[in-house]
Length: 397
Ligand SMILES: NC(=O)c1ccc[n+]([C@@H]2O[C@H](COP(=O)([O-])OP(=O)(O)OC[C@H]3O[C@@H](n4cnc5c(N)ncnc54)[C@H](O)[C@@H]3O)[C@@H](O)[C@H]2O)c1
Image (cartoon, rainbow, N blue to C red; front, side):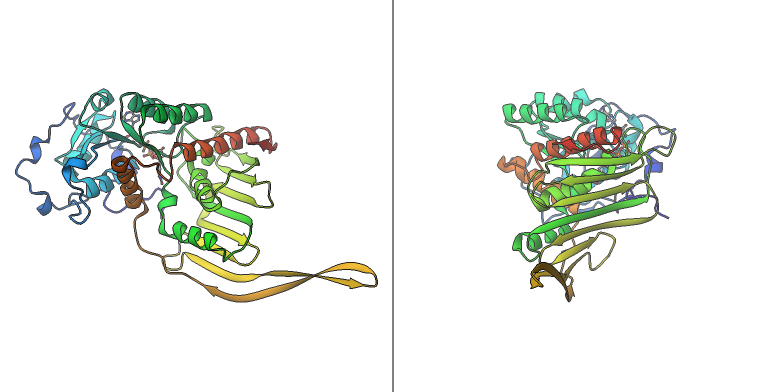
């Protein structure tokens, strides 16, 4: 049984448990690419070893990237960067040297180091993709930007809004790309939702109801809000395109460590639109639903539905007014029309995200999920945390 949405992705070649096995001999501080000499990448087999010939980018203009952090999520970035860049994925780094075993076994042409200074000091590396615990995002991203590298940082961008503001400012001043991996913004189903919303088919948006619950992995460093809500908040940020005005949040810690494992967050956009989020590591079943209610139609996104992830409902109410005995009465009529499921492309969101980052590096474009988008999400997370401590007290954003 899957315990959380942290199931290993195909081709990552390792599970969360497998990465924690002790006793693997430490590797050399920097593993030279000479091990790959004579190996034709086109004939290499195994997870992630074969660069995609169709998308590999010509060498001279190809950015050179290093992935930092090879725990649960980092190997997914490695697999995707390698499939797009081949050996312009120049190096990987994890402060636990035994993580290098994964690189050695699956990507023998890629260097590994347990020392971030080696990466920061390497003039042949243009950008870092950071997949380390949340409290390390700020110091690592700051060091990278200061060293003249661009940065892709995992969600959530930082632990505080002040840190996020500083990174945005530093990236601007140094003319570097700063992007946050809000993976769901690159999900074809979410892209379809955006298309539907922007087409006006739903009419004015009235409410959004989001549920992301399962028997999840209890994180030791962040609560369920910082772990799961960035996904849903970034989906709503992308769909709605404007920031909420205020929020209120409730949460409960049930594991005896003071870290909330259940939370409800309510956002008010100040113009009639309200959005509700339920994130929970304690649910016996896994649910990944988002309902987007519009004045004309509504849609439901079910991330677990293998085929019909997005359904549009031509259902709703029509309000009529009637003068009866001199009194103004409201009459509600219910409409029940068709339900349909638009076609959704099959594409790995992480692959799209990585490709977008590389495009932004090459063309020096502002990413869709840039530092400012990351900052806005961190502000909401930060406010949700404060509201939970204040028993749901409303906070103006
Ligand atoms: N986008 C998504 O869908 C998604 C999914 C899961 C996790 N994440 C994010 O990825 C990040 C990492 O999560 P995880 O579950 O892989 O964590 P993890 O604890 O499994 O792995 C983190 C790795 O970073 C290494 N590390 C820590 N500090 C380091 C440093 N200073 N230098 C080099 N290596 C260092 C650790 O040794 C560890 O191997 C988090 O921000 C998390 O929110 C994103």
